[in-house]
Amino acid sequence: MTSAHVVTPAPGTVPSLHKDVEGPPFRRLLVANRGEIAVRILRACRELGIETVAVYSDADAEAAHVRMADVAVRIGPAPAAESYLRSDRILAAADETRAEAIHPGYGFLSERASFAAAVEDAGLVWVGPPAGVIQAVGDKLAARRLAAAAGVAVVPGTLQPAPVDAEAAVGSLAEASRVGYPLLVKAAAGGGGRGMRRVERAGDLVAALVAGSAEAAAAFGDGAVYVEREVRPARHVEVQLIGERDGRIVALGERDCSIQRRHQKLVEEGPAPGLDPERRRELHAMAVQVAQAAGLHNAATAEFLLDADGRFWFLEVNTRLQVEHGVTELVADVDLVREQIRLAAGRPFSREAVDAAVKAPEPERHAIEVRLSAEDPSRAFAPTPGRIGRWVMPSGPGVRVDTAARAGEIVTADYDPLLAKLLVVAADRGRAIDRLRRALDEVEVTGLQTTLPFHHFVARHPGFRDGELSTDWVAENWDPDADRARALAVAAHVAASVAATAPPTEVSLRKDTREPDRGGWARSGRRGGVDRWPDR
Image 1: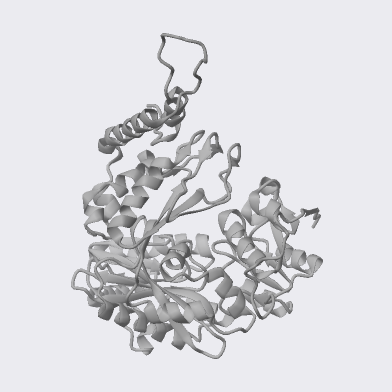
Image 2: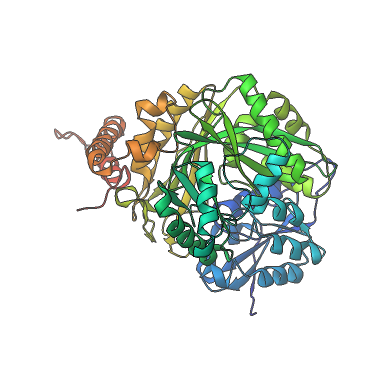
């Protein structure tokens, strides 16, 4: 491998006022990721007094995480398979820079037990659940068996791989009949909807098993599939967990991630609307039971479905930091990345984490996150790579933006199209929604289509405000053709509001009978940035 170091002086290298009183957990840490999550981890390291190493592909040579790190190492060309998924190159970079620990972020190699094991075998510290835990719950069937053995209700279905060949079809049909139709064929080794098939009748089962297995094998290298009852309508609720090395595990609260499309989350919030403290305690206890059975150490998330009758059903465990971890951070007032790093170094929970666990059943704040992505919501959320033109993110009370994007940056098709995570927090859900609407009105992005129109729609939808959530919400409510006119009306309203309050762009000091142009620049800027839709 040919690598080139880009040594960058860390901006603001004055000593942090918030360093861990016990000293930095590690001297140097490598971040095996890119984009906003790499920036998020680098910031936590800076506050802890830890030196940082970034890795980058050719496409990211000028990226924010490269500029922020103390040292950056090239690991290959743009395609992820030749760079961010090359564990050998990442380990070589850690060896070159004498890093002591590796944080994988999310995505890429973050849930690969083999990579975690390789990091541990190299004498480095893996910032996340150990390889054995990832192995134990990374397979969904293994996680289902583990949860069932721990006494936690799992979605009715099989606990062993379903036969997919024609000769074994009779056995599969018998199992499916026991589970009940409609049902889902699901991949044991992965997620994101890959390998998943919905089956309404027995005659379609064998074909669904074969197709699902083939897709799972191509995506994850493992064609094992199983059948599970379709819980519908349902809400998707997940519990944030952290665990110490000595076995103590606590829940820091839950998040509702029901607004999703094809099993990809679009909006997340916490706490989950409609749950009272007793129901939260019940849910958190179930999540801790599963984590204890798995021997969890560090951070993970237990995911559940909440059915129409108010019952929770265990789905799976994610052994990594979640994209939406910031929701819990805002509600619980805990830095989860900082907590991860400290736990990886063998330190106990921080005082903030202990206090947050005690308060989790009765949270005092509400947070919402929307994922601003380079996707076109009018075309089934198709990716829209391109060059960012104007880039203005919101600010003000209770607003947080996690991003690594900037004006002029090229968004390629090589990676996930996520541009920024916009989060808001307030004293209650109603005020959080109001704050979200205000923050979205401040966003200006030109040059490529984003999901901004969809988020404006959600934030203004009466059903969303009333907490009428389900995993079918997008399919039932989002009609881009019908709602395009509404989105453009919102754009016009916001532009008019800005124009009405904007100062004159130029006012001559000499007497002039003409009225000054009040806000012409604001109108033109807004026209390109608010609820931008492609021309048809």
